[in-house]
Length: 401
Image 1 (tube, rainbow, N blue to C red):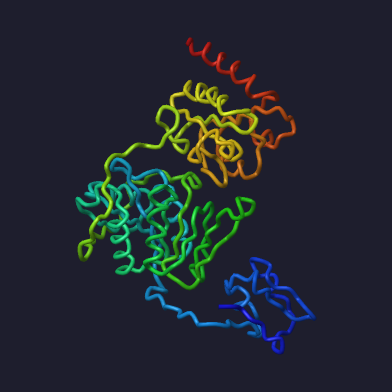
Image 2: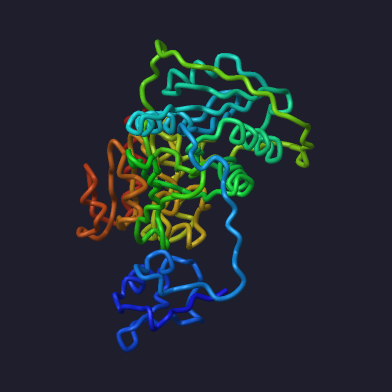
């Protein structure tokens, strides 16, 4: 399939040149010309041309209509850990409740669990107007096949306008499977959300081109609109136990065989078994730490706090000094600790985007002009590998260690 231009019809407006995402269109003799090698046949120019001078050459692709194109309500997928909703569930319910109210829709939670218990009321207290419950012993642990089937059956029955899922390990596994089965799009790893009041189209914003810019994605033709949202991007609202809502129990039709057996589970966590997204104190290192061995100082510093963990910049991850799971930034994780130590981190905008919600930032860097000092409440100009041992010794002295 290739995009072609009818030069007789083309009026030379150059609108297609500006919308082409890969720069495959040029103006030649005041007419649009498409480079067949560079073109990816995305169709952006096809829909933008005011005189329909661009067409598709090759076998036509059948467009499958979506039954629930006019879906209603915004849904949030509940993720459980040790039988309780994880933080991102509450964060999503808070922001989704605001979006739903803005668009005149309802905020709904989807709960797939071994048993519901008091979980529906907790979800309602967090902002849900409705809770769709799928309960059964087979759902005691997350299972790709069983959860995908349950969510897809719910979507087919109740036809939501949008479904939001946390960008966690399980969420990133579930979301694309649901999107593929429901023949809709998926915007992954979102960092901002909004909704158009009239069209009720969700505006999903996410990092693009390696985190160098932010792109806002719209799914204007298919339903449900779907996206995964990073944890810690939004703050959860205070629980309101006086709220009331509707609880809908749903029984899935048919039996789906689970093809995965969980042999054992081991939590991915940093110092003292604490994930960086859950830590109250994060000791992060960048290229200025010099080498992997020097991260032992950050581990020692983090260990001096009750809820401390170690993180790092993309540069440190690229060097292999710490795993990607501990990366802070636009292409890593968003964190909101009470104290954030930035050691040997210059403060590129991509890193700042992942930690600018910290209550207190303490920066250590040799460069007095480093951007990190612009967001830090306290700054120390110097070599982090020299400053850290002194800082650790001082804290130990205060603690009487």
